[in-house]
Image (tube, rainbow, N blue to C red; front, side, top):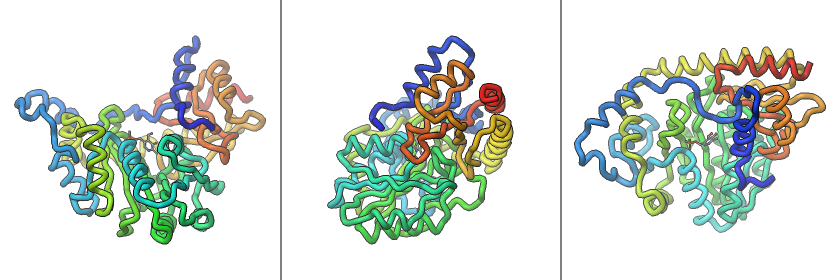
Amino acid sequence: MDYETPQFFRVMQYANAATGDVIDMVSGNPDWQPPASLRDGLHDYADADPPEFQYPASEGLAPLREEIAARRGVPVDQVVVTCGAGEANHLAMTEGLAQHSGNEVILADPVYPYYAGRTNLLGGEAQYVPVDDAGRLDPEAVRAVASEDTALIVVNSPNNPTGAVYPGDTIRELVAIAEEHDALLVSDEVYDHFDYTGEFESALSVESEHRVVTNSFSKSMAITGFRVGYGIYPDRLVDRVRTRHMLTNLTVSRPAQQAVYRALRETPPDYYAENRRHLEARIDAFTTALDAAGAEYSMPEGGFYVMARFEGFPGTMANVERLIDEAGVAGMPGEAFGERRADWFRFALVTPRAEEAAERLADYFA
Ligand SMILES: Cc1ncc(COP(=O)(O)O)c(C=O)c1O
């Protein structure tokens, strides 16, 4: 699979060019409202004095970093505010490869394609560990491929695309494996607010110089366009990460940070709980309608993606295009995420038309 050409954009372009009505289940852009206080923060910022329109500190606005550190129970020096979890992952992977002797990167299959693309870009060598039928990663399978050549283990829970939430034991074992092989575990927790099991455990629960936790407000506050995220880096890496971030970006947009800071302080837990409930109901309606399509699917434990497969109709790009043209539903081809679920499709449940989409699929496969 060519991970350097984002398949996501290819599918979006194809869907946008289609003549019929197409339900977009490709993007990971939430369709619900951001917290009200985020809008208040933006309004107030418009009236701020000129000094507040200038560069913020490179590693992020101090109050925002302090708020994140307090909430996550980590020293503020370990927090770097980044352009989304995307940059936080990039910094972690770049430093992981630079600071360790090996160049192997252990990734789950199916994989979030940006980890794979970044591994290629950075000259790393990807080693894929297939997940089980429930989408879980078996730490023993990871241990079996780990060696002195391993620089990084990159995981994501709740997972895109499978919807799996890794048990705490798995996360702890993965950190231990990184320690045993002098490697770095990168735990991307960007969907942590969308855990339907109540069992999600952050890798922050393990104190270690061998783990990085990345996260962002893109999904939790429905603001993928703001580009505010963060990484929590161990002391041995954080200075280099800060330097690399400064030399690449200088810093992150100040109005976006300011609005996120306000929203972080003022948003009640209900906002997140309500979005979770809303998504659970949507997942339920979508999967019930998928039953009528005779599809096999994975019930997500977290996040907002559902993977499904239809007998005799594998998840290729050609079939994605057929579904766009003939069923009016745009999803992602399973093959874009690796081999383990190449037969499947991934549908993003960030549209109010999710149930209608499943009904279209049911009609199509009837
Ligand atoms: C697993 C995963 N990590 C990172 C990102 C990017 O997040 P951000 O917008 O914070 O850069 C996404 C976006 O879909 C994602 O699914």
